[in-house]
Structure formats: C-alpha cells, structure tokens
Amino acid sequence: MNHPRLLFKNVTLGNITLGNRVGVAPMARTSATSEGMATNQMVSYYTSFARGGFGLIITEAIYTDDKYSQGYFNNPGLINEEQTQAWKKVVESVHQEGAKIFAQIMHAGALSQGNRFVQETIGPSAIQPKGKQMELYEGKGLYRTPREATREEITEVINGFVNTARHAKTAGFDGVEIHGANGYLLDQFLTDYTNKRTDEYGGSTENRIRLLAEVSKAVREAVGKHFTIGIRISQGKVNDYNHKWAGKEKDAEIIFGQLGNAGLDFIHVTEYAAWQPAFQKDEATLATNSALDNGGLSLAALAKKYGKVFVIANGHLEDPGKAGEIVERGEADMITLGKGALANHDWVNKVKNDDPLAKFDEEKVLRPDARIKDFEV
Ligand SMILES: Cc1cc2nc3c(=O)[nH]c(=O)nc-3n(C[C@H](O)[C@H](O)[C@H](O)COP(=O)(O)O)c2cc1C
Image 1: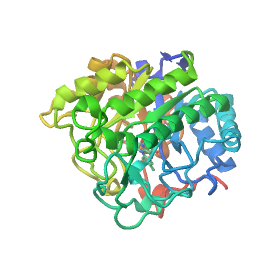
Image 2: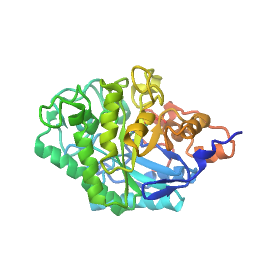
Image 3: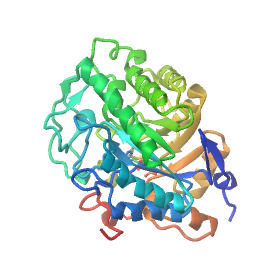
C-alpha cells in the first residue's frame, strides 16, 4: 500500500515536535470522579492511544472554574491542586509512550447539562439553546434558558481559562486547546443567534469574536512564549449541526484573522456534515470540504488562508488516503481522528503495518452513555 508519507513525518507545532501528524481529537467520556478527578482508568485509556502510535492526544473537554463552566457530571476539571496531580499521572504515562498531550479547556455556558457547583447556566444572552440535552452525557429534555453573563462574569470566564491553562502547564501538558467550537460558551459568543448583546461583545462579527481573542491573548500572557496553545473552531454545533456563518468568507476572514493575531500557535477546525448518520443525533461530524453554504473552501483551508498559523483538520478522516491527502494538499498541517481513533486506538500502527482498520461500533462504545468501557475501572 502507498503510505500517506507526510502524515507519518514529524512536525513542529509551537514549541514541540510531534512524531507524526495524526492526533486523537478531544472526546468527552464523562469517566472522571464526581469531584472531577482523572482516574486510573483514564490513564490506561489515554496511554493506549500513545502506545498505538498517535503523535498527539488532545484530552476531552475539561472545565475551567467552580462556577458555570462544567458541562456534564463526571467531567474532569483542572482548577485545583488535586485535579492537577490527577492529570499529571495521565500526562506522565502518555509521555512514557512517546506521545504529546494537550488539555482541551472548555466553558459549557448555556449547553451545560450537569454542573455540581451551580444549578443555573449563563450565556451571552438569555436565549434558550436549540435542540435537546445529550443523552450520551446523561442529559434529558430541553436545555435551560441561561442568564445573560454580566461583565464581571465575563472577566471570571477569562480568568477561568487562564488559571486552567496554568494548571495544565504545572501538570506537564505539552499545550492547551481552548474550546471555541461546537456550540459551547465561546462559540455562543461567536454565533449571531445566541449572542444578542448590545455591548462590545455582541453585534458585528468583530465584536462576537472579541471574547475568543481576549481569552487567547490572556492565556498566552499567562503561560508565556514557550508553551503551545491553540483554539478549536467550528460552524456547526452539537445542538445545531448545519449552522453556517452568515457572512460566509468575509466572516472567516474576520474570525480567523483575529485569532491568527491573538498569540495562538494553532487553529483546530471541525465541521459538521449536512447529513447525519444515526450517531450524529448526539455528536459532531465534519465535512472537510464545502465549509460555506456556497460550496467554497474547506474550513481548514480558510483557517490557513486567513489565520496564517498551524492548522489541524478534523472530521471523517479515518480513511488513510483521505487523511494523507488533506495534509499533502497543504490544506492542513496535521489531522485528528475522533471515532476512527475510538475504533482503532492503534490507527497509526495499523496503517503503517497495512493492517485492516476496525469500523466504529457506536453501540459498543457509546451506549448507553459515553463512559469509557474498554478499560478496567
Ligand atoms: C464521544 C465523543 C465525545 C466528544 N467530545 C468532544 C469534546 O469534549 N470536545 C470537542 O471539541 N469535541 C468533542 N467531540 C467531537 C470530536 O472531537 C470530533 O470533532 C468529531 O467526532 C468528528 O470527528 P471524527 O469524524 O473523526 O469522529 C466528541 C466526539 C465524540 C464521538
């Protein structure tokens, strides 16, 4: 077989060098303790991807404060010393197998459906989210209508990302990914119909991207120059798969342009497909082409064109030929796999050895919920 060679070549991302250009996409598995501590089961789970040859692992979304950020019960956090020590075990074990690991840090905002700290939710505006809570994470029924975040609370949100990034550095992570995608708080600020604010965080695209750029800059300032940081961006959302930016390529120019100037080392793009296989009732999928309604450039290509930083592409790239192509074409610098990695924790080793790849079995892996099942507790 013709191996996708560039995919298996090492690459520099920010301050680190990855052994290859294939990463594990962030995937919430709601397997932490109720106090948000990473467990031994999570150590085994994450280490298995490193052993299977992935150059980079991005963790599941981790909450950033003890207020409104937690999205699901049994989500891990990274906001105190105990949680930092728990993650350290994951990081050290992954490093022993030769892979790098980033922490994905997230504020769930209006999409929070399980938070042990507070009952209510906050968002840019008091608008009830579309769709239903995700059963995958033990949610039921409609989302709650959030309270409009005050200016003070916006500052607290930024501080939460900053503190969590600092803890990630202390835990030994190789970098952090700020979750700006999929309909969670930062994406709620970016999205026209969830953000009806009349201050400088609402209105124009320039205003709606402001908080994402401010969080990025604040995190950069806190962690210093020598720590790798990036952001994840999508148009679609877990509760609105087919959303597209109204301003099309002009919006992409503003969004990626602002983020490209915010001190980030990378932008990780994911795009939901217009069609939904059964599984997609619950989660993300991505079409790497036709990002815009009019069938324009892929989101990865747009991020490269306007962001001018390292771009990671994600979504339906488990076919090695497809994964190789997007990197060979220069649309992205590397790719990540979600479901393809869940089906093949050793995707990289298998492809290198010409071994057959397993198909993703949704029933087995994600039913009745997203908890990790293939490793002992
Ligand atoms: C079980 C599961 C949990 C996920 N949790 C997250 C998450 O915590 N953060 C995130 O940015 N995306 C999350 N996603 C989306 C994936 O990162 C990815 O974008 C999506 O699965 C599409 O990529 P794929 O076609 O390679 O699976 C999740 C996906 C799955 C399947």
